[in-house]
Image 1 (cartoon, helix red, strand yellow):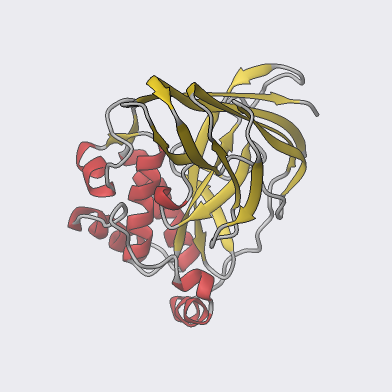
Image 2 (cartoon, rainbow, N blue to C red; image 1 turned 60 degrees about the vertical axis):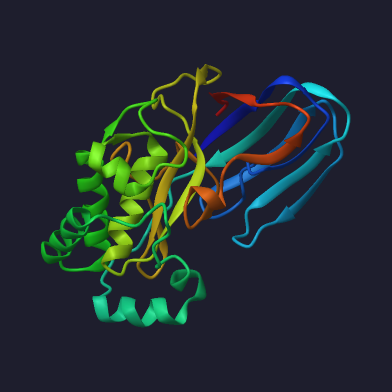
Length: 281
């Protein structure tokens, strides 16, 4: 088990002055199997009243509004979490059993249809079908799909936009973790494996010393369903473990964006992001 402290700072610098802004943040981790949240809170500048609620997918949302003029809005999410790898039983489920299970689980059924962001091109569907033909169970097929997508895609920052689709990222074979996850989701869903987009954090340095502060990442990975939800990180070609911190999940990025909102008074805004992670135990 590891104890991680995550500090995620993000916000907007307006070109002018915003007279008001209304915002939702999905930046605080959640206690679940393999993860215990010891503390978590968000500070805003300018200071603003906050209220928390759970969205449809169960993600914690911090909502707030700033009603005084401001040229910059800064959010700092500070969290202390204990994380440990989650052990899964060996998968012996057949495709027929998966079909029966997913039809009886609302949670699984809702993660099977493609969205605008995940709809796969035919070449990607062929990759997924080939993985199914090469394996004997849904779980082994899902892991092989994650591996093949991750191996085919190159992690490159700045070559895609936040609203790009899986088809666009696959055509370029490049993108950031968001793009690679959308491509993976499209492939998994194309062969009947429910899969969801997970947002969180990744400690990028496995051998970091206790107390060492490193530049971390706001990260994304997939969870696929084969009797239970199993996490896989196609960007890094690893199972989700004790370097991953879960925040929430949805059908794609649109359901789980870390910050979104509207503002009035300014022409445009520039976004800034910084994540720092330190291992404390």
